[in-house]
Image (cartoon, rainbow, N blue to C red; front, side):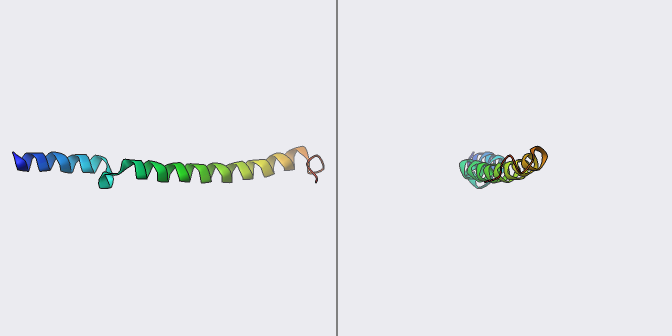
Length: 58
């Protein structure tokens, strides 16, 4: 009985590595935010180049 329970627990740990899915989710959220900022910055540069730097000159 105990061995079967440990096997089931091991499978669950395989589903969620280290038994802390929230930490992994937070890590992916941080990656997504950084990626979004980088893409937005590059996209903004493209928009400025297309519309003309004179329009956005400071």
